[in-house]
Length: 282
Ligand code: FPP
View 1 (cartoon, rainbow, N blue to C red):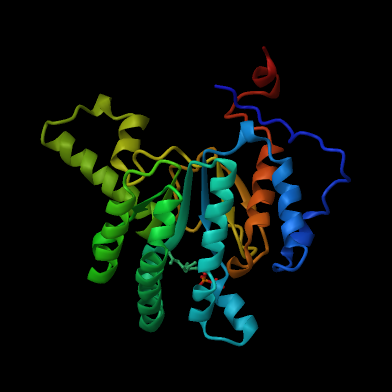
View 2: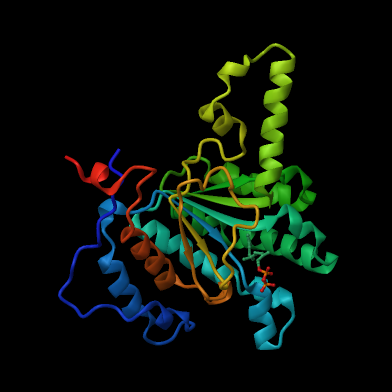
């Protein structure tokens, strides 16, 4: 496997302004920033799987003097923008942390509003998603979601099951520890009942028993809002992911931010425990 990600190809323009310029919300210059960044992306080194911790909705709403739910409502556009950006450059898997196991402990009104938003967003977007070749998928304890959400998700997943351009995975009622616990219980039960030998337990088997089975490990993990932590997201799967943090609050996140994250990723050397010289030996 070729692990080294070289620099994005040089273009004869002056270098792009530093990351801090990307903190600003969308403005009239955004299309040109977007095009400039996109042009710098090396199509041969696009991450196959990008995972995103969408954070900062509450703070965004607070800054506008609005209720927290307004931040969530304004969190739909950046999902659309990220999905479009990912699709345009050939990312095959986009995984979004939409509702964690711990989020159940939020005020009931906020939880209810988020569930309603999920149902409405799926209803509004499914035609467009299907037409764009998006396969909708979920990870997490989706049985614990309200019936309306389960129905809307099943409908959207059935409808888009044959699409292959990109897989959009929504992590819903998900936490990595919940998933790891389930996996350990399932393996322990099979060993106890004689269906599995201890020596058959390996990384591949663990992959198969997690709700992320079938998805490649994320290459790039983005977190918005300036927080620099993982918050119980994909703990097993991000072992070798590149992490990218931005102060931008999720409702302000746009395509050009996504492209910036991919460009940063392409400037890194993924060594997977090897040395630089080993990676570059022909
Ligand atoms: C984190 O911000 C965000 C969430 C817990 C929910 C994410 C939901 C969306 C982006 C809305 C749309 C999603 C779908 C799938 C339709 P926060 O509320 O923790 O923000 P804070 O840290 O500023 O309080």
